[in-house]
Length: 112
Length: 305
Image (cartoon, rainbow over all chains, first blue to last red; front, top):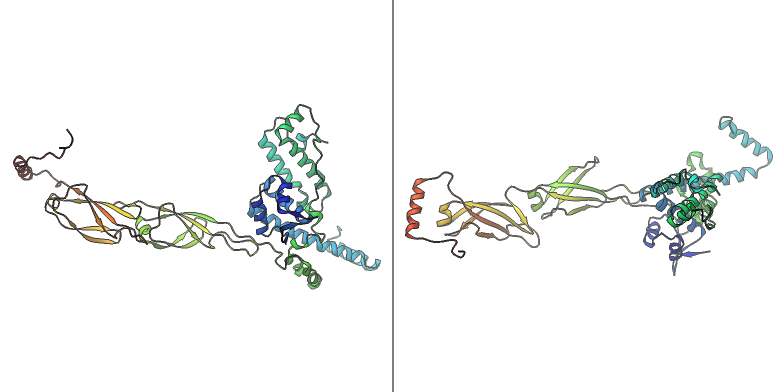
């Protein structure tokens, strides 16, 4: 499902077009560019909603918002990596998996 | 559904401002995208949002307080949070390459793993966001003559920054000078903001400014007023010689062309004459003038009776 700029603005109610365009210009949103203008997929819409919450409801200024978004993106980058690593460990033969888990327990100081 | 006041940690007497503040605080704490691994955060955030939606709408709040509607209000549209896409590959373009490629402190394994994946990024490689830095605002006191003639100043700003400022000739009170790239640093490699400097011109004891013209008052002696003569007068670019015409009165204005504020349209310097009595009373002068006037009576207030 793809949405246009005006559909996003209509959907969020209080959001103004020029604000949405500022977010795009800042690189916070990367909608697909097409002959009819920007097109937002579900992930773009969800991300726009997050920026909307941070800006309109939590009243973060752009400087602060940029920092929060950067941390969210780093966190998600880390989660992607961790998820892949977990899946890779799971797909190993039992003895390899156990060896990895045992090593992790040691590294994490016995608490894992 | 729980009582919306309770959800926000408030009582029925809460003001609109208290409701807004409570929501903002709780939303920051429980927003699912700020707690991507925490399932409870999403439930809690939904309750907080629903409570706020109800209480921030005066009509809905009144209806709820009056018992006309229950706390569930209207069904909320099901919302999918960004975390459902991020960290799962669907929002790969937003995750920052230096983080994925940048597990360098864990060894090269991950960097090699991620290398192939980057190709699928939408719109090319600029996944990292860039943002221009903010503008810094300063106020700068400038001497009158510096504002008229221009100047170069090295100024220590209150935030510890040292700026070299070229003050253009003819700058006006309240004018804003923009120093490109001297504001706050950009984020993610974005350009720095600008320094915006508001000029505050200090007054001068002799000169006043009127547009591009300079005005000053020039005291002259009785004899200079009567017989005329050449006197020295200060202008913004230094002293010049001014010829006072014979028989000049107080208030007469003499124009020194092109001696005002420099610039495309050069201003003039307007000198207003002020006939000045000698410093102390003098009998001889009184007698001479009195005698002369008895022979040549005149009434400078002649027009008004």
